[in-house]
Length: 460
Image (cartoon, rainbow, N blue to C red; front, side):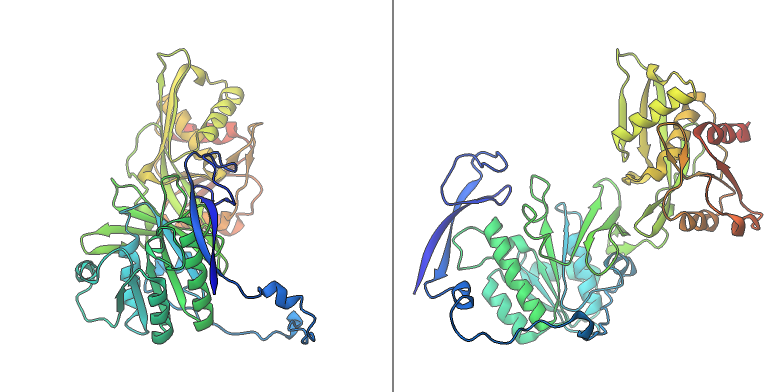
């Protein structure tokens, strides 16, 4: 026999309570608590069995030094950009969550990857949002040859688990987790309880059958991925698919990865026949124009160096307080750089509106872009074009000093690979191996004055 137990769960933060309230005491949201009934068995729980006076069995733990080292071969996804973000491919028995805004291309990317992997191994694609015929229409657009990809259009969790148990695929895709339904729960699909229970059941079957499971999740109206952090703590890797709806390129970013580096970046481009890889993403973020207020930097997303153009525009303000607007740059970072320039270079920037943007719509959050932002601002203020082929790398301190940033060697190698001939960096790094290269000249500066005076005087 089983009995139903009612709990009340907030759909915004996931907090649970035994009583209904109009407002959640945890996050403060109104009318976000709903009743959920959970069927529990009336027999003794596992805690009662553990504390029972029966004869205790020998301990099951072992020394970590005696644990066997298993050599696991990663499963290639069929796309180098996706493998880069995953850390080399899919790990057998792992759970990967891919999220993003609606219509960004999550299903298209995973369907292309599943089709590529199905040429060599058994792959199951579970479509919980679209019918099999609708998925076939999208598949015809990206694939012309025959494929061994298994397709299942189902929302019932029990039937999906039966298919995974009987088919035993190496890779399985769930599109999407918010559309699955557990019949043992009275709540609607997409609720916190449904996402939690369905994900937990899928995790158990994936670990038991050693299935690499890819789960697609949608971003909620509050910006949370597949609910209030319910699924992100459960899975092994979390990837976010980003992009501007007015641009053709898409960015696949690693947020969490237990088997690889985080903050890795993969670049794709949306075309008529699906998503294609971008092997040289620096070309997307370089404007290839010369004008006052444009500088070039090399940023690092994970282990990948990217050369991008920064743009700045200064205009005399007509307001009591100047405007500060940024696109792709943190606004507080811009305020700090403007204060340093006005303090240590005696520039009256407080009388000017300042607009800063990153070419290509990329988000730059690391401090290594400080010197490039400052160079673009001063270039626009002085109305002087920076010399073509000049790159800026460095962090600016509040005292005007320049600091080194991480992965300087990779950044310098990217500068040389792209054919730039001048590089301005902070002091403190050994560049002896690059000094033999006569095609590039490296200038080391200790403060912001030395760097910008050199950058502007070289043009004159």
